[in-house]
Length: 233
Ligand code: IPE
Ligand code: IPE
Ligand code: MG
Image 1 (cartoon, rainbow, N blue to C red):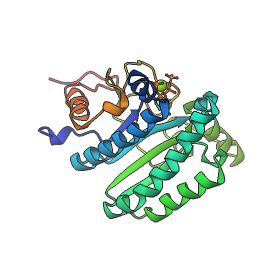
Image 2 (cartoon, rainbow, N blue to C red):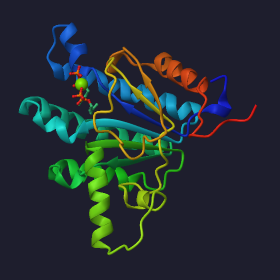
Image 3 (cartoon, helix red, strand yellow):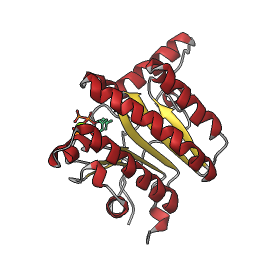
């Protein structure tokens, strides 16, 4: 990237449009999810290459359970297959894999895959790859509140509250990308997105490639982040 000094530290992505990608080709939705998994690999490669420190991808929301059972099962098997396939590669490239969400509600098989991926890559320092799985922004806030109550914490403010979120050391995203033309947050990272720059593209997730990612970063680099202040000059 030409503007290396303005590479966002944390990029979060709502990977949307897999179903429509498949539908346009007359294929079952799961084909879109398969193709979407390939797009995730490209996004990881690019983020790693340009020096993004945290990449968070929304893989499955708590609301996605409302979809037909066949689609949910297919997504879950795809996730297990994909995580298992990626673990050695992530380790080799020094990428730490982490999960965000109510993972304790997932099947034993998925939980053991998740634990394996987190355990094997836990000392990796090159980049953090965070997979939001069975994730809901409101649930994350509620889970934080429950933790605060159970630990009998007496004082809490905006600076200490994030210590009770799923990954306390995760910085707020600098840039959020959502594909497929939808302009909404869909219950993603509600606390963390307070001052994030938002980027929406019409491209469907399976078609999101290095060029598209680059466009998002170039757009980000042209933004002026003020955080409520008035900038000098
Ligand atoms: C995103 O693609 C992947 C998940 C939500 C699991 P969709 O499956 O939502 O695709 P569209 O939005 O129906 O096209
Ligand atoms: C958001 O996409 C969740 C994921 C990308 C995993 P959805 O397709 O579920 O969101 P809505 O239903 O369009 O808001
Ligand atoms: Mg969708």
